[in-house]
Amino acid sequence: MSTAWRPVRVCADVSVGDELPGTTIHVDRARLIQYAGASLDRNPIHWDETFAKSVGLPDVIAHGMFTMGAAVTIVTDWVGDPGRVTDYSVRFPEPVVVPYETGADIEVTGVVTARDEASRLVTIELTVTSEGVKVLGKAVAVARLD
Image 1 (cartoon, rainbow, N blue to C red):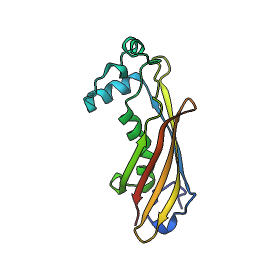
Image 2 (cartoon, rainbow, N blue to C red):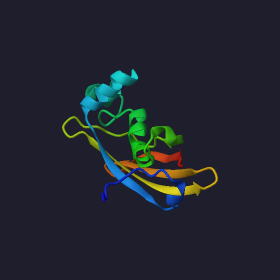
Image 3 (spheres, rainbow, N blue to C red):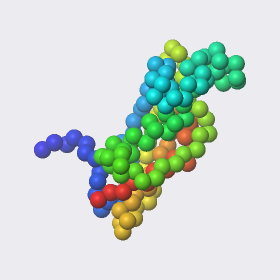
């Protein structure tokens, strides 16, 4: 019998207060350049240190949409299917600063804050930080389970 982690898919198996397995997402300049190409957001604040500093930033910063998308993967992994996420919203209180030498780590945790058995919807509140600073605020995802 395997004790490997499996996605949660049944609403009856979930309780308010359940914690999702947390994750750390490492971001470096190469990943930001790849994302810039894929998203067509080629703003130099995301890859050019000199430019980022010239406009008052401490260094290059990660794209907000990259950070938002990376953070929700703990929910999609937990429910087993990205299509089960029916709603997701965040605020952007602080950027993820990505130094050239070290890159940056984005720490993501989540907790179930509501469960509706009738609709089979669960609400998950995410905590998303980098270097101890909250980089996403009011990060809430809703997912439909079986």
